[in-house]
Image (cartoon, rainbow, N blue to C red; front, side):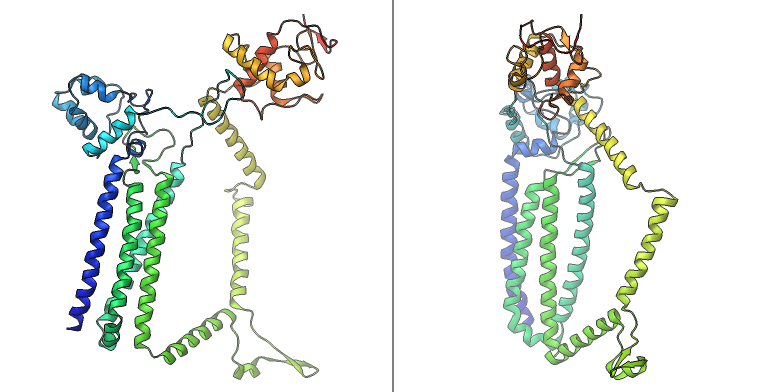
Length: 483
């Protein structure tokens, strides 16, 4: 009878809690379905750009194109299963677009409402303004887009997912242990008194799981993006895990640890009902004593006579205790580490020493910089700089010159602290490559470096502007005349 009452009380709490959780999940899903920007970034951004062609075609105005072709309703089928729509042969738009990319578009598991949300985001898309102000008029500065480290995120995802599985297993084992205790006749009277409190506690745990589960769901339900065959870009894994997914999964793990901690305390509380308080204290003291023995290997006071040493000084005698095991273990560990280290770094050479590792990192960083500059169309240096003659580039170079150079060379380049840049005399030469290097790296004569202020394109524009300056009488000639 008493168990029936307990079960009814707890089940009522569970039903209420589960109803609240379902309502939260449904509401969260509705809100998530309307978030066209996040759906686009999660489902479409790997292959499509809104305002220009990429792996897939540009999407700006795509809904109007399908509607103008009389196939506005078929766009939903195209998103959900493009291959099926092409095979059916009843869509001219699907047939026209199928050969744009060598790979077939991946089917997307989206509802019609979610497709509408994505299309609404595309139609209302406004290109964001670059927050970094250009230092000079006419100078072009490319925006840098942050891209998560998908390989690192995928490894973290695997780790957090494995951790979650172990925590679930621990929760399952702890719950079974509590169930066994609840079925014990030894605590049924105590359990009657605690049933209401336990029900409330479990209800709170369920509420926590539901709330944080909702956060994880709304943040990650649309975030996991996988690359089908032939879709992955160079260096991308098969599953694209965003940073927000990692944070959400970490949050879920923390909540599950809280649940496990709660169940552990509940189990401890039930155990204290069975084991008398004094017996528990004795057991705790015994456990501490045993741990102390393992860590320190001390001899009991009653047996200290057996380890007394022969020498004595002023009535003081010495005990021949063993070294603490924890210290001995650490000493052995250092020996093992030293052997592994010397084989790894000096004999086999499977790992790099600091200097070699530094050189490798510097070489890799230079490659990364070159790749970045190439992507940004800024792979210009003192070896390949060319004279720019376009009016826009010359105007940009003039703006750069007026901001950075007139304090030393005067507004017309006639020279002040620095030499006259308009005559035929040059200290280092008037080739555009030489001038590029001088502006970029500076010189020992007082010319400061500008590589930290200007990008390569801007340096090339400034050098081209200087070489376009007409002769202006000013500071006396310096350097060698270049005919």
